[in-house]
Image 1 (cartoon, rainbow, N blue to C red):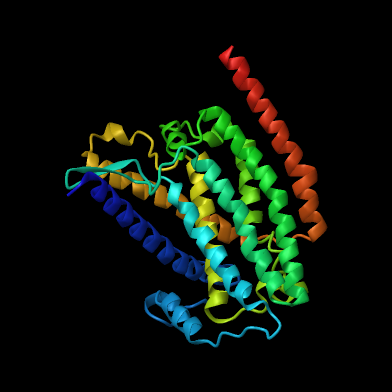
Image 2 (cartoon, rainbow, N blue to C red):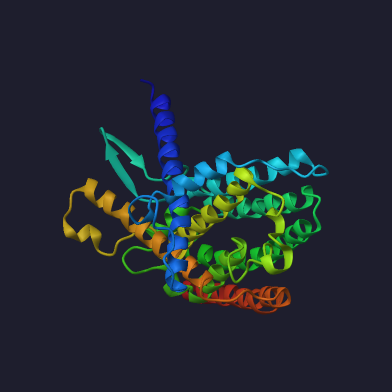
Length: 344
């Protein structure tokens, strides 16, 4: 079999496995949030379908598939259908450059545990994050509903505002590592040399911006049920609504994976190589380490949602422009000065 065909099959296999695992995790993140919210509010939560309610995501998927798809008469039907697909595709595509392990040898072939190891991986992520706003904005505009339009406009302003701080936080990490490749970021965080130690301010800025970019409480102003009914997805039902719903949780998982990769050591398990384990099991433990770190970050996203109240919109914009942006700029300047002083 030609080498190019083998590499193509390996890449296709990685895409199928990663996307399958990601979609399964998205469904069960919804279940986890429902259980955590029930615990926080001192109630039971879903526990009827299957043991401990573990089959609830499957029942929910069937229910949404069977629901009627309602489209307003005066809506732009093409854009109305395209918007949720944009949100979901962007969310799933972002994971393509995130390394979830180092390398593993299967059937005598060394396989990189990353779908696409591009040399501008972090720029690819920032570009896709910027595209994510189109799905929400277009859904609000195409619905021909004032509440939806307001939700879409809020989302545009919010995401553009916090992308600036997010980009500046990432620049600090790029200056420290001298690369745009995500696998290089992880390799440079060997043992306990995690970027959160060298960029604690950048970590906090990126974390807050990630909440804003994923429209999670306390930054869920594009939905704001008390004001906008449901915001940008008011006029959506059936699987179109489900795509928006799943895209939000996919973005939570992807954002958690990016935070882990940039600041929390990625798949690095401190001193794992000193245990004398076979190379195959080292690779498996690295993947498990990455999954556990991401799961902990996802749980943090969920916990914050059921802990903090929603901001007012003026508070949200003031935080983005008057607090986070100046701090992010100052952090970048200090990082650059320190690197220049150390190198000279």
